[in-house]
Image 1 (cartoon, rainbow, N blue to C red):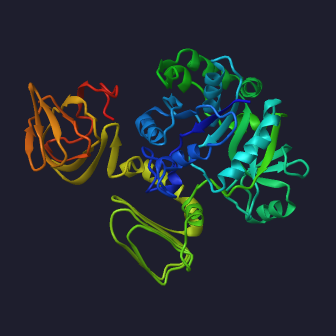
Image 2: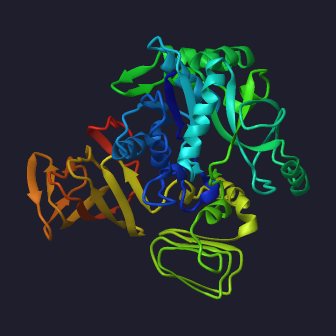
Image 3: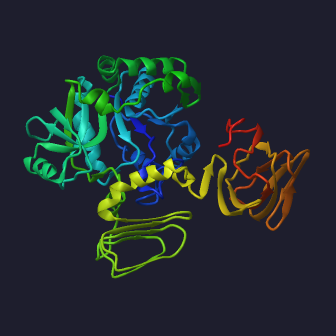
Length: 472
């Protein structure tokens, strides 16, 4: 039976702020090891029988970041770009429609892009064990064998015992500690992993029964979709009219076809700093120390430095995370409340919720080093072969100094190259562009001077990434 992985790469990961931001969420971060969670999700699929190229569903705004990581991982998926997030049920429905478009009816292995599974072989064995039931029309989910009375996860109660697929009796919301302990002791409950296996046709049949409005909206969006090579763009108006809902709420909690297979593979959803601490390597005192950290008499803490020295004395059960523009300090047992704090920051209009100090673009990134009224200093990093859009600014001039690599500069009718320690000036309203013609990273220090320095003061004339008229 053919298996098409469907990687759900949406979500903002706000509980892992300030490392995870809306524009660069946790699935794109190398939180555990050198590869991102998305890349690790793809890697654990290697060796599955019948494996086909994956379908990756992500937000349109993150397309270049996701595509870059997929290239690094050697994966060539179909990339489905949602104009707005609508939760997992519409995402799975779009993937099912795409998988059926060629005439086949493969199994869809639906996986969040931001989970940890330490035992990839056990995971692949579980998928193989579930394949027959899914091929027969079951909508199968993987229930993680619980190891503690966890209150941060939903639970699934299974019918009967054994290691094979079993009928789902009920889905249970996150319990209190006493109830979670009862679930653990009973042996009949499993953590809800959010991973699924079902035939594309079976999913479409069942969502048509349980949530026909979602199916209809996705069918309209798919019928009007634009296709550019391995990129599928659902028709925006039709897709945005779809109501958001999850796979569990829209279908799994209502259907009579739900089955669960126990999974014991070292799973974690990395859904909080506490969960990341538990999944990280720890010293003899139970501390996970990442980056330039010096800890004295600390225990059971997660201390992370991204850009400078972080020191701590006498902490017990704490989370401390430093980035270039923000610092988080929270007791480990309150780590779920980080989302509440991020919501409050968002309501106050703080840009730090969406962006870090370093902002990633299709061509590379820029890091805001300093700013005051009338000027701003950035470090631009341009990837080999990359080129910024041909653009102008109405309100600011720019001074560029190359500090590493070679830059090809367009300034109005001139085209010239700058090498290390050379500089140029871009006047207000001059058309300009930077290109990296070399094989090494290009680094430029940019000094902006003007009465308005917002990122929306950009008029694009040409852009190889299709961003004409946009400010991202």
